Image (cartoon, rainbow, N blue to C red; front, top):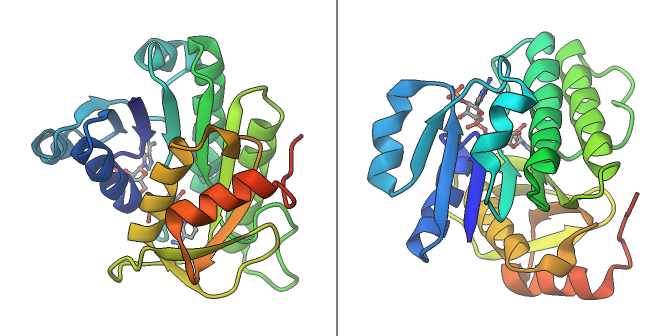
Length: 226
Ligand SMILES: NC(=O)c1ccc[n+]([C@@H]2O[C@H](COP(=O)([O-])OP(=O)(O)OC[C@H]3O[C@@H](n4cnc5c(N)ncnc54)[C@H](OP(=O)(O)O)[C@@H]3O)[C@@H](O)[C@H]2O)c1
């Protein structure tokens, strides 16, 4: 499989890239900082320097051609202001979707967030509100395409070692989740085409990752399509 990861040097992006390369997949990592190239090459990925806040869909499209899937793992990050929630978490994700359509790449995995899909809670600060609003808009854009999308909404992320077990729900999740487990979930989603059309909240839980994804795809009771 050839997978393009937007945000390939991010904390989840790197974990995902290593997992995929480790089992023989070909991975292109979209990055904006050329200093990150060497580390990604050492991991066995192909880095491609492209600032997703500056690129156009026409510039991005040729780099996606021939890929089997794209993963949106970029983000403005916790230190950013509200404006970059819109230019990265919304607009860069939309750009990736539009370029995937133009390039003929069917599969798109979105790393969204807990809370997306609903208005920010009353009293939420400006930056959190912008983040949830931006993620919601990106999810809605993707859901409105005819791509084979899956939207994964992780709980609060931690860098603790992965447990290999999770809980996937259609409704709001409870607890945290490790970035290791999110990366493992993304691999399982790539391996489960029937998970297309699902919006899944993910948190720590008792279910082995592949089993949780397989069950969600089979049941589709919490499925949200369009
Ligand atoms: N933190 C949480 O608890 C939480 C919970 C749920 C979901 N999420 C979401 O999970 C996703 C991944 O999280 P993470 O912890 O892996 O994030 P991360 O480590 O901050 O990685 C984000 C990546 O996006 C890249 N990026 C930012 N702007 C870019 C641009 N203009 N062009 C290209 N790349 C750009 C960053 O590159 P640089 O290194 O160059 O900045 C970085 O490598 C994010 O979408 C985040 O919103 C987070």
